[in-house]
Length: 219
Image 1 (cartoon, rainbow, N blue to C red):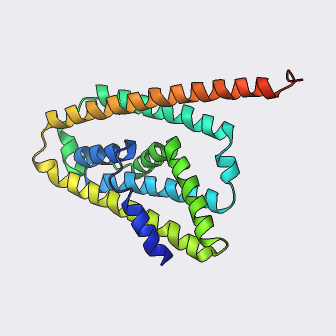
Image 2: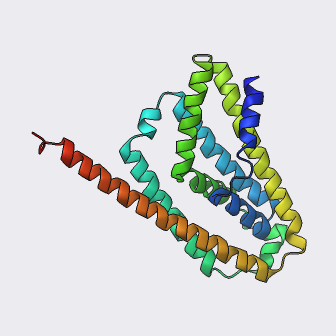
Image 3: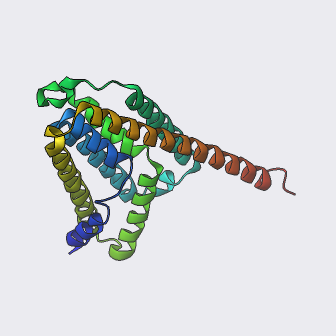
């Protein structure tokens, strides 16, 4: 029952239009289905890591100001830098061949991991899900495990489906279309990176002001 509830919960995330969605589509179009699967697997592993942290009672650490600032800055650097690379990189014709990928599986796993892990909204989501699971299942650890597993399985399955559907379009997609898509994705990631930088700046400013108000200057 908990697993089925997790599947239903995960269905609500299938059409989420964030950096992960566009990265998987872009990778499948340009590098092929199996490469996109590696990116999706990296995403799934980072989700699993967050679930493990939340399940072992480390939600307080995940909610710490230092960790939030790290995610905002780290995510901003990764998204801004990758966005620049996509925007200015020239698309090669060989990228449309399944044999055209560079064979570096670890690179694409890490790519999926970082794009997902360094997105502050992802950890906020999993902290919320962990709280929901605690309310619904309490100390029933197997039920909580089943619930989390259902969500991850559904999200991972949907990412595989997206990868497959995007790959099916490769036969009718030209190099110029891929180039334009990369530029659009690049702009999206650059804007996301700048937004994360602004979030980190505002968050750090608020924390500094708060510490001054509640610190030794308060009598």
